[in-house]
Length: 255
Image (cartoon, rainbow, N blue to C red; front, side, top):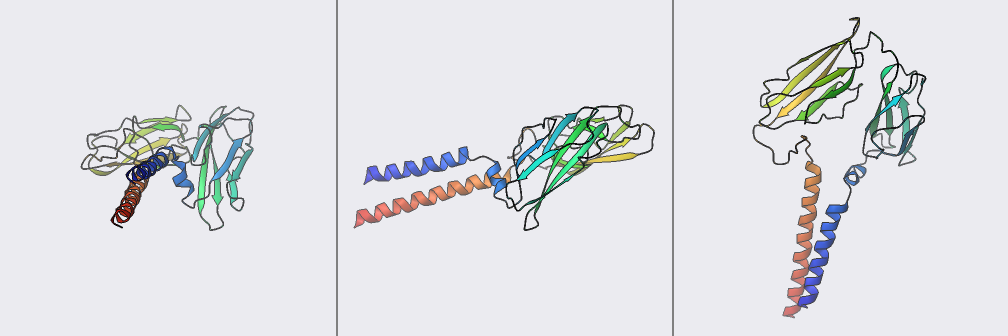
């Protein structure tokens, strides 16, 4: 009986540990009820990074002759509708394509593809082609068509090193609010004025600085509370199973 109880305990622990280690992170997202793509590809260009259902932001480069991009977007659920916007009439510089999925329950999910087309960029462009903040990460991932971002930093960070590159090198970029970060929410503004001064676009970054060092903050500033809670629940479930098995064994011994 003793050997049998040890075997059961070891098997339960092995199953729990294997499940926690092997289960891919995207399994959590796929069970959330939001619609996801099963396949995504574009004719004549290469998407970066490699497609994964839970990766929502991609980039690609197109030559000067490319005027439109044919996309193959297949949802995991055949009843999900797919709408593609922005893949026609591509202009030199940054083009943003949106793939909007809508489930039968009207839950939506959007994939974004940023296409950099070769050629002479318009002097009226006030769009950034790239935006980075040093060792920290923007949320969502940068896309030229998205102007609002956020990030989490630690309590020792008092400024951000921001690199904002416009698609037209002669556009003027002005950054404010990136120094003397205080505890709480800080707003950084990045204003882009086109070469011919005909248009202006403002990008914002909300920087959240905690009063104390968060234990779950990675070097890149990503928090994964759901993933951590899920593993804790699995461990608690394992302990409950072990206690139940031990109780049954104890009751059998008494009888």
